[in-house]
Length: 166
Image (cartoon, rainbow, N blue to C red; front, side):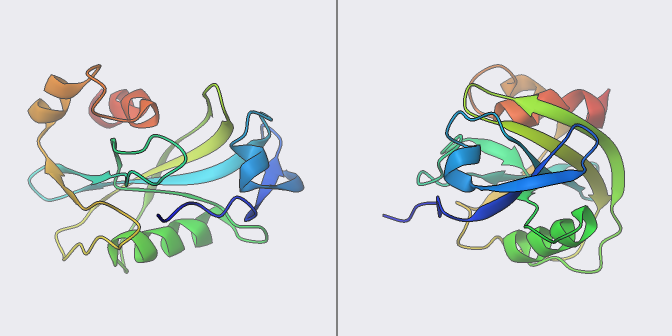
């Protein structure tokens, strides 16, 4: 069975996003509460539908749930913008999009703390989910709201819905 690389290194940051060190994925996701940066992209089509990815069962965080179209860690030595473009290319095969940053916030769970850089874009081109995902599809606003609070979506995604449709 596939699994995440627990020894992969992530930057550790302060609340302003300034890098203060580094730690492994295992440390960052293992309850240490080390703040590490991640990028999210919400991908809308021209009809206003939102693309969501399905997290595979082998993921160490929120397996099997529907999530932000793209979500990924910033690598050591990489800018937020570089990470966003890399993750979107790797996860959805999308290039040439125009991201708009809509928020930066700290997300906490019982296992980790993330500094989340949230972006949105409108894209009507092809979307090709990688083998890192269990696929994905476009959801209408009504369909998303009907499934909130039912355990279908990740807590991160649910916390961002107000940013998208508020």
